[in-house]
Amino acid sequence: MSARGTLRRRRFTSRVVSLSAAVALAATLSACSGDEPPKKAYTVPSSLCGITVDPALVKAVLPGGDSLTSATQKPNGGTIRCNLYVDSKLVLSLAQAWWSEGKTTAAVAPAYPGTKEGTMSEDERFIYSGKAGVGRTVPSCKVSRHPEQDLYIAVETRESGVDDPDAIENLLIAYTKAVEGSAACR
Image (cartoon, rainbow, N blue to C red; front, side, top):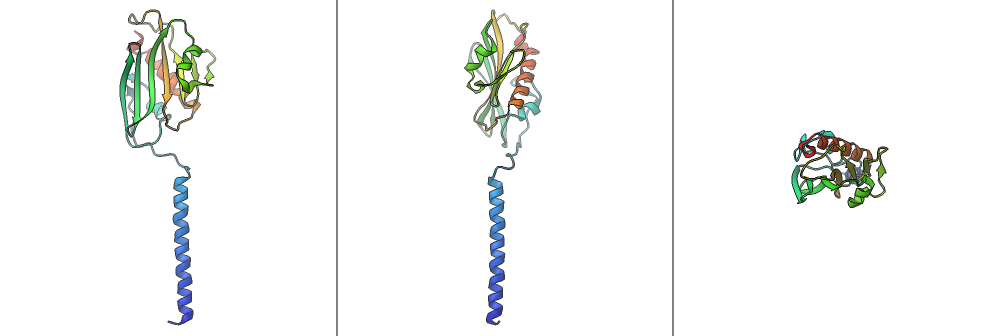
């Protein structure tokens, strides 16, 4: 092979290697750029800790991952918390908490830091941000175990990267209504 032929082959090989490197770099940068959210490979059940709610509303406030698990927690006599874990990391908490009768949603909301600077619904039953929300159940939600108390619902994301006020509002309202129709209010 002549010197000229060897030089052409080197230039061609160099261009191919450069092109391959550029393609690999572009693919790497694209994967890191966050253009696509991580895939939600898990299935959300229609009942979370005994409360039936539309799985799509729950999934909208969850991060991507492979597996979803839930666990019920009762930190005190008046609270039931349904914690959701994606890939073993706590990402969402749905709580039912009894508060002294006559409290307003605005008075209860500060107990849930994610509602800070949230939006209040017109009827003042709900306050929500992109990360959390609090809702008051209807006045007819009464049980003998909690006389002179009102039941509030809290939805809180936990370090999930989710910040979507519409999704939080939709889940909060649906979950509150589901609790109102459950044994929790009878």
